[in-house]
Image (tube, rainbow, N blue to C red):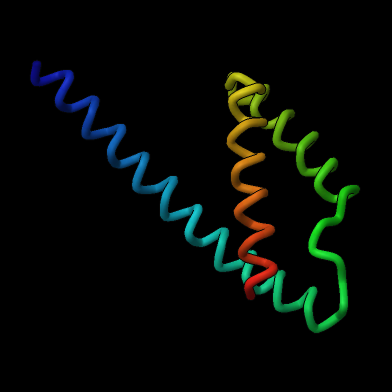
Length: 88
């Protein structure tokens, strides 16, 4: 049981890193939103989103992750990023 506790603690540490990185990402997204507003740019750039999706899919494969899971996660992140951009 000590081993399981230790493994769960490791997962908790990784989860904290993931959430911290998501927060950092959203801070950058806010800056992107302000830039787009100042420069009258569209919040959704389909070509850029497609490039991002392909890139993240390749990264998922490189790290041995399920590409469907990464696609789902990135879709959620992207939807939130668009909300943040629009409200910045």
